Amino acid sequence: MNINQQYFERSEWVLGITILAYFLLNGAQIFETAVIVPKWTSNPPLSFGLLKSIDLKTFWIVAHSLHEITFIAAIAFCWKIDAVRNWLMLLLVLHIIIRGWTLLYFAPNIISFQSSTCEITSGHELVKKVRLWKQLNLVRIALYIMISLGFLPLLIKVIRLKNL
Image (spheres, rainbow, N blue to C red):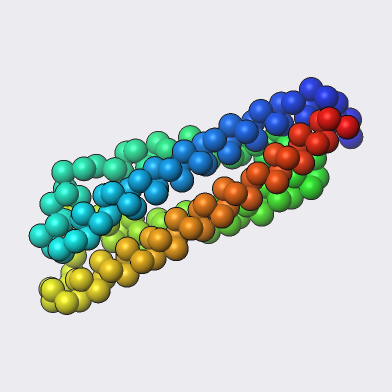
């Protein structure tokens, strides 16, 4: 398997772009969690009006799609570097697990809150459901950040290999 300087340079660039995309995604998630989530969770269901006035669905679909395209590109461009490829594959699996959790739990619940089709009629139950969503969202954001930090040692490894 022939890996030349140019291969390492391309791998470095694509991995760097992927990291940048992930960090931008993290920044948007942190912003939403710090600014928007406290407002729409402050007094359910009265505070759900904010969810109806903001449509974040399109933003998140585009942001995640762009990031995942760069992620797959990083795997493709780093394929010949076994240690980097293997770690990227592990990070991809972890990312897919959290994305699955998002699609199976977070998205349906926020759509329910947004459309006022929440099946819970008791105010106390609704507050509990919203509080759980908010707490689990913090866990989800922390996991996304940890995954994105997992890219940094891989970039350092590619840079070191390139400079050998």
